[in-house]
Image (cartoon, rainbow, N blue to C red; front, side, top):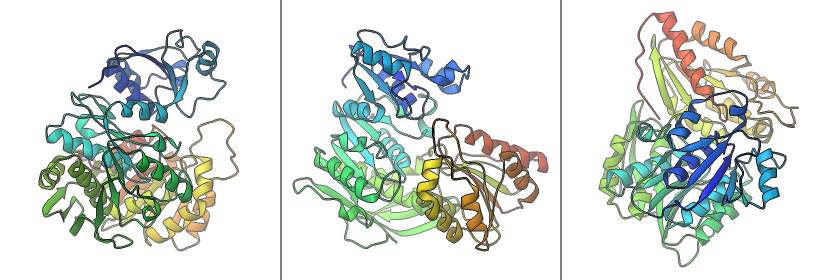
Length: 475
């Protein structure tokens, strides 16, 4: 494995969900790493900062003092603006400035990388692939956008792993276009929907990724939008499909005989039986893509399938926080229409479903407004409850002319229970209204306080019932 011991980097915005594990990874690869974050300057000592220091990342104020002569690069998140003191100091010193996604692509190019791409499920597939490789003696490194429960102990909070081999499993990002900068050994394309960008734009990004893939690709042929992604004639492609796909196409590996239950899924693929201890068709899809990717890396399909029986999941991906008085509480990252629909379908209880959804920004809410309304109208049933909290406001110069009321109003006029509520009002609504057999799910992205909010809801239900929690991690 290539060492970075001769390199030095500064990470601006180091506390971000994508930045922190990358800074940890680079430091543990041997580089000298400093980092700054405006939350630190505001006196907010978040747990991630302790994890960064444990990984030998030196934290400094975001005032330009961490940007010094001799740095190989300033690595910054998309939230860092050109007026940021770190950015301005790097410009003054002539130090290269590089976005997180582009830097990750450069890092991956120095290793035998497996790049996971798609608009839904990437974090889970990436963690699954890393789990399978680790379970089969490959000793990979790993970088993902979610916190893999398996890795949280050794590499808190779980978004990375440093292995001794040259294998590196990475989650790519189409939102900033950096997916097109990767030159991996293996690329996996899981799905393609309208998300951060229009489908036509993302199609071009995925095509570029395939052009630059060195050994082999894995492709979901049951996804109609992925069918329009051009395939390089010389690139070997392992095709995969899932029973019930929107379109049928012949594939080398097909997940079939699918059986869904509240506690997990079972299916067959390539003659092997797979069992994964998490619910929903999305779990079947993610597992099929991960197994196919492992096969492309040289692992037998039976061994790959067996490994997933021991997969512990990813935080905030249908994570079961606990249960009280017969009510299950979940925390999920779902924030676009496709992810929301899949989460609702996976969690469908015998009783009512309580969806507490916080839209994750004004731009995305405006972009998805009509699709969000249609999703909630069609996925929710009479008797379910949709409680929208105010849109997450990250500050800056956002156009705030759209509000949660613009989603709740049209949904409520279609014979579905939907309203806007503060967090406290939503909490009280669940405590007073949830009944045995119901399920509660907190949905949303970007806001690091959502997991705590889900646990606050569980605590309220426990206080109502007076019983101890029956909690276990779920995807």
